Image (cartoon, rainbow, N blue to C red):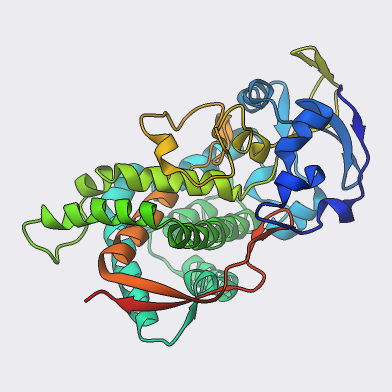
Length: 389
């Protein structure tokens, strides 16, 4: 199965710059493909793991969860997200929880409720930032996350004591389930779910949006095209100050291309972990029962045989190209395809609309990008936000 790679965890976590992977093969999962083959075995955090950079193998693994594979993440992940996190739940409990989350992130709720709320929050935040001499955009976007868990525990306790039976929001639906005589969820699962949802809402989206602003700053032709698209939306409105409609959101074709390209380069999720339930034979490889397998999205997203000039920011590559494919795995796949996909894209599109139609910005300092292996801005990314005249 390719070559066996034995690297220390410290070396794997060593920081690399945005383009270091082109010169340093060990830091770029795409280059591992040419060094060790599309599927190889290694030792990762003390576990025997098969790493797959092969789109066909990746698709097979994700599509056969529950039958041939199960979700199984390293202990460090469990310690961060909780013992009852969504990634560790299996079978009926996971499917039930997924259905519960879809009540919050489903298209109807996004269209009827969240679109207006997102725009209101984006406008308020941007207006506040424009009054400051400088902002660190990553921290500004994700502000409030640190206090969120304590707030959630307090709200959960208050709702549990309430006698109301109405489900006014997602939290009420969770509490209603917890109050059943034989609930499927526990308070631990509920709180871990809330934490994961907050992490997805704040941390991942803020990183992608920060990278988007950085890439737009570095590629003025993309910013010009994006501004043109949103300018036409305003021009076609009967009332300039009316909110974004669902029809307008669905018309943001180039915006979606920018979002997809930013997500492809961001590679927020360096690996998706599964465990083989039996010996698996696929494409000439054997994955032993009990072994972990790490599906590696960055190796696919940065593969020059799949994406021409993969390190180049080129939103036009997404024109007339299907999002749902074996070659775009930013939101996972199979039964665990991210239920917050539409929420994340809507949130980013709304933020971009409010930003490019009302504001311009200048770079103050920072903006250097590293991977450890996740995306990071060690010096921050400080901007001056100014209203357009």
